[in-house]
Image (cartoon, rainbow, N blue to C red):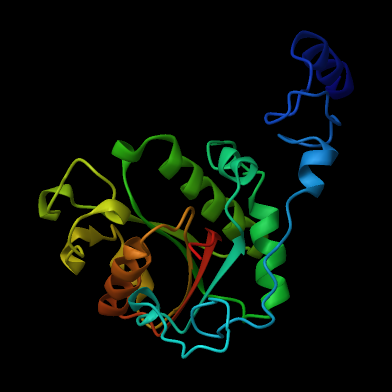
Length: 224
């Protein structure tokens, strides 16, 4: 029955790549093999062990957003293809397994809790996509997941995301609905498209204030 329904759905809605619009394999969720092969993980070699920025001959200073997390890493370089995947709100999310592979390559310890950086319904598909990635990642690890939320009344500009605030938001501008679950835990903080890094900074600081022991942050698209 399942095979019959799958065949019927494929006949009514042919599986096309969301980027190049060519026919894709039925087993792939959004991209064809060609577009999927164009995605490559960022290598952790020759990168700062704290902020993941490339190391060169010049003196290196970690950005402010990694001061409240033990380590920060990213999965991909910026590209139109990878950005298109952050519009998906499917569950399980097609990017969650790629986040998992990068986390495994980094050889980080298994966290007690998965948390997504702060967001709300106002951000639309981007925040829904992020919560789907973090929730799907938590399912792969069989660990609990909690989202961080934005209190827009405490933002300088309530109509834009934390990443695009003109001033660094206060810690009180983000909150957890179940803060007791964070106390004395090791947390993996999941971010999507990192631009200014302010969302990582404020989210990690808020989790520290809630009582988290250790925070490691894994973002989707690198800002470097």
